[in-house]
Every structure is written in structure tokens, then in C-alpha cells.
Image (cartoon, rainbow, N blue to C red):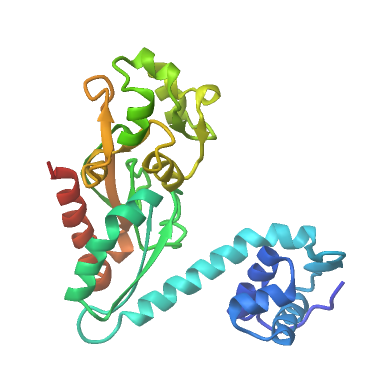
Length: 301
């Protein structure tokens, strides 16, 4: 047990702690953070002294966290998120719209839809920096892990400012090469004879979908992945039939929509941010650009 000291833990020590926890070694954490291994070791030693706790033990394959470390991890994550948010706010002060905005969005939205919207925003505000996190977590705004979130579900937290921008239409699609080899399904029952692309792990939404469309039952899927991008890549490669944004598929002439009259869903799309950021110029212009850009994406024929 370490003796209690009067040293207040440095925020950077928490960051180092989290990186050692994630990587399992001082050397890996040092490489990730751009520090030397002795510096990382000193950070851990200093944090242990300040907290009067043993956080790691040396194991055969690296550093193993103690029970204390595992219990402290969520709080350290909170400290790290707050520190990052503080730096983003500090970076925004000065003339004009400037600073860093941290966005979070689903994989397909973040990779396939947002880049041209953000590029146009950057041309208008060249002192604006964007950080993009691909995630579906709904609570990261309250934890200050992001400034603005694009979500396919209505935010329910009272501390958020949210705007619905419309419904993203999704439909069943396949590569024309796949359909040439395996035929085009004419009914939903025909899907039982096709290679279906879908999710690996079930969610309440997916279970409800499977009741209405049994072809999406996990056991019958020929390709399973929880990554939206992996599913999209499989569809584009001609692996089988899967769900895709209609507007996204329309840009690829090799993708063909099937069973349009029998399968058509609209995913509500929302933009949300913490209400404390309502008056932030960097967040206000980004929020407006996302609303306009996503609205145009949804409305396109």
C-alpha cells in the first residue's frame, strides 16, 4: 500500500493510466501517447502515490490492473472527457468561428455521408477543426465525450438540444452481379433461398424487425457483422442481399434495390448537443451545417 501524499493528481496522469489500462504495457502506452516509457512509468508511480493505491501489477504478458484500477477506470474516463472538452472550449476563443468540434455518428453516416458536408463547412470556416467518432452510444453527449451527435433514434435526455432532420429510407439491395448469378427475389419468402447480410448481435430493434421480416433471423444469415460498413462492403462485393440507405445505393449503379414495395423503412435521424453549447459559435455553425447537409441527403430523389 502506498503512503498517502498531498500531491493532487495531474490530469495527464489519468490519461496515462487509461492508456496503460487499454494497452496493457508501459511501452505500448508510451508509443500511443508519444512519450518515453520512463515518463509513462513516472506518471503511474505518481498517480499511485497520490491516490495511495496500487493500480497495476506486473504479469507475464504486461501490466495487469488491480481491482482498484478497474473500479477507478470509469471516473478516470470522466476526468479525461472533461479535460478534452475543456481544451475544445478553450480552443474556440478568439476572433471568428474557430476551435475544435467533436462529432459522433454511426459508421455509415460518418464515413459515407458526413465527409462532403464537413468539407464544405471547413471551406467556410477554415479555423474549425473536426474530430469524428464512429459510435452508436447514446450517452456520450452527457458525459462530454462529444459535442454533437448524429443519431438514428430520438435523444431522451433532458439536458440535450435535439432536432429531427428527417427519415433516412433504407431498403434491400444487392450487387447486380449477385442477382445475375442467383436471381432476383420476387417475394419476401424468396429471401430464404438467398445469401442474406445482417447483424451478428441482436438488439430490441432487430428482434422486432425479425418478427416482421423472418429473413433477418440470425440463424439464416449468410454474413453477420455488427459493423454497418462491413455489411455495406459485403453487399457491394456481391456477397448477398442486405439493407442499405436508398440514397447511398442510388449513387452506385451496380447496386440494385429489390422488393421495394415489400420492404421500405425510414430511420429517424436526429442531431443533438448539450444545451450548454447552444451559444457556442463553433458548435452552432456545425449543428446548422449538419442539419442542412443531412436534410439535403434525406430529401434527394
